[in-house]
Image (cartoon, rainbow, N blue to C red; front, top):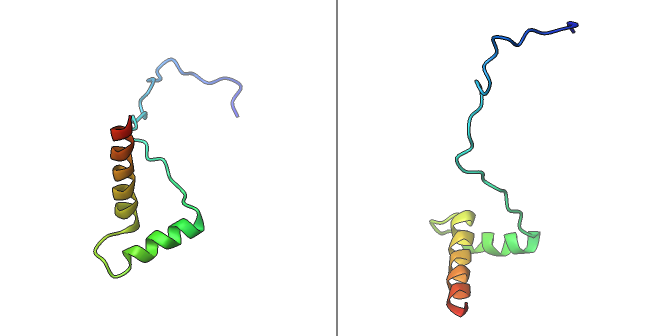
Length: 66
C-alpha cells in the first residue's frame, strides 16, 4: 500500500446505483412451505404467487376489521 493516495480528482458517487426496490427474502417454516408448495403442484401458479395472493387476502381482512 502507498503511504498516501491522491483523491483530488476523485468523483464522489461515481459508481453509486440507487436501489429502486429492496427485495427482502422471506423464509417460510418447512411445514408451511411444504403445505403451500403441494397446493401449487399441477397448477399454473408458483409458490410466490400463491403466498402473495393469500397474504393480500389477509391484508384486506385486517383492513376491514380496522
